[in-house]
Length: 445
Ligand code: GLC
Image (tube, rainbow, N blue to C red):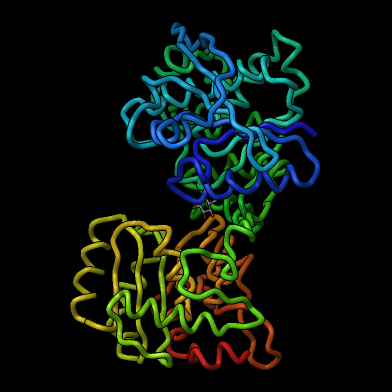
């Protein structure tokens, strides 16, 4: 099969979140399976700076976007059996960040139109165009729109994957014709309309041939108002084409036996190196160097849906125990301030790094005994999988992909790969923290 994967970010080129990790590993896995796979994404400034000299110029053209005619360049790169295409327009993409601009709607409408028009000039017509989140949600709509007039588009099947339904691409009614270049029927017929607005993700869910969510549990959760951010009825109406497909991680990229970031390497057969990594982490972060004190880690964006209120609520109580806490991440000011102050109260026992460093993240996964992820909602979550790969036992709330990947340890039969709690309740989380075994018990089991 010939698959075109459409994404707004992908490792190793550009990353703001888990979508980039999936987009950076799924295409290779599909290609290794025998499919012909290409990926297409915007040529952001940071990609051009870092990869510019390896890119091959393919062609340029003008893309129609409503009344606009916009320059569009196409570059490519071959890597790991996958062809990577980059869409160039410096007005839209030569900026320091990926998102967060006043004209994001126009930027990704351009990207989606460019993808749709460029399909015709790719070496082979894709059988499947696989889109991700709101930034490429217009692609299935444009393909459907073109197919009415142009047979080329008729046989192409489309997939939209929902990585996080919180972000839907909602714009005022006036954007429909003037910005997105769509006929009013798309709105009046209800396909792209939601609560009086244009809603790009809804439009893709309705028009795509298949809708996937990033875990089976999330696919079910999306049918309920608590998780669906307003789109629960849309999800229920499209349930026949909704599938939960669990993400995975790249087992070669994440491998403590070959990770250059670590002081010592190790594997599940011989965990000796993990002890050395724990000591190195404690030294580096100014924690007391104690092998028997469990190191509990969080590597997370510091935002509410990651369940941080539970941590704030109970931190003083679980820090009464013999435990060390390491937090890496950035996000909302209230959580950053909280962790900063808490860190001062627990000198030598708590370390906080407000920012993101891939190298430090890997050192934390390797040095930690326990990994905490008490998310309020979590479409899939990759950190708990990386933690398990590095022998840090996850403590998670049973939601979304956390529920599908972490199975509660049962002392009576020795089954399970972590600790879980069901209710979004600080007391329930704390119970687990109080009863979690010591590092010695964990490595012995
Ligand atoms: C989003 C979700 C996260 C998921 C990732 C990759 O970032 O919040 O749970 O793992 O996408 O699909």
